[in-house]
Length: 440
Image: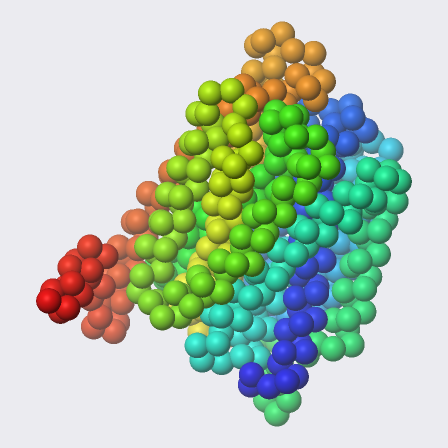
């Protein structure tokens, strides 16, 4: 493992994931355009995004079980084909209903991609390189948001809705061809295994769910990934372009800030995860606190928040992207490789469960506020700054609940580690105090 062929397989897996992220995030750039094209209110627009995320999250566990049975190559191929069909429907949709059907297919295809790519990392790499390469996968995959924020946005605003989404569909054709040619499930020489019976796969799923370490990974993903996903997939462009008054071009360009932050912070988080495996939850909680403080500055700022404050918030949620990959490291640590598909599927539900909950609630709050002030339902009225101040506040409720569950599962996981391995993980302040006394 860790051979030149491993890096080729990894490169193609990254390409497939980058294109999946492009398909996932394309609606975020087109949010205002969708409001005008389909004559929708905020709640209807949030539904267009939420159904995609609901399908994605709902399929994670079935996809994980299937992944353990048939392997990652088949699932990545199937996902690319389904996303092609989905984006074709969105491109040609005469109304909101057909567009929703298309986004459902996009969510289904997207659901098959990331955890399959993660499985390839574990199959083709070994040792301490695994968490680093896993972080690299997530970090490079965020380039898909760059593709949606820049070239996709240019096509959308230059030539229109249909050419933009047809171009996105063509990208998934490229991904399918590349995966079919270059990817294999495992290195040569390993004994090829037949798909295991469904009953055995379901048993592995139950085992993964029972382990508190898997559930800890779920909540780590829940609290770190959701804020950035909500912003990039739907509400970021309306907030930046209309509420903050930056215009669509600048708003789309600013979506690159969290992506660049993820690229820079991902390797550091990978190193911290590999070197301090018993302190991963402290890293997660630190990221959550930073995001909460940054959002508070933006939402509580009197008047329109200045660009540096907005950029600070974008940096904070950008760290949350690679931070969410710590959840998959928990899955890898506490589950055997044969069960990783199921375990990763469980973890991946976390962030997207929080995301679609917040997306929907934000749309509800925006519509209720617009009706309360006598708004006319136009983008300028729906996406006013005062509305977003209220709407984005729902993040504190959803993420706060996730933090409470994370702390509870951390305690359970540490008890399990003590029982199974005889290792006692002291609170961080106790460990730091001991380290300080050793230096004296």
